[in-house]
Image (tube, rainbow, N blue to C red; front, side, top):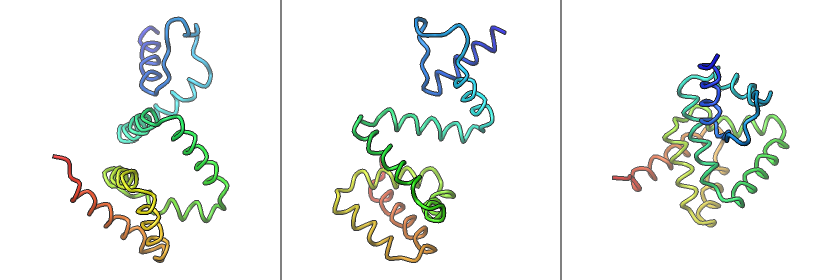
Length: 146
């Protein structure tokens, strides 16, 4: 039982749900167990993706978090077909390219981002994935970290 409790605390800590001795309930909250059960179904690659996502959120300013929450609300309000079209371009992209895209867009100014979006929106959906991949690969070549 002690091992299970220790594992539970470790998983919750890794999940970004800190438990301090003063705040720790005698038994884990139902939500914590739901999260833990979900984590136990994930493979190592999915857990790594989750850790990277948590690190990105922790690095955000409060204003960036608010903006992202608003964008998520807007995304959820899109019709299902439009949400699926947005997802198509990213579902099969390797993590390196997804991270490269994020870095490229964050390093671009507003005018550059608008131009990138304009160029992509002008393409048929089937060609957008390849164009996006090409842009990111070029960015990563020219901005390679030593």
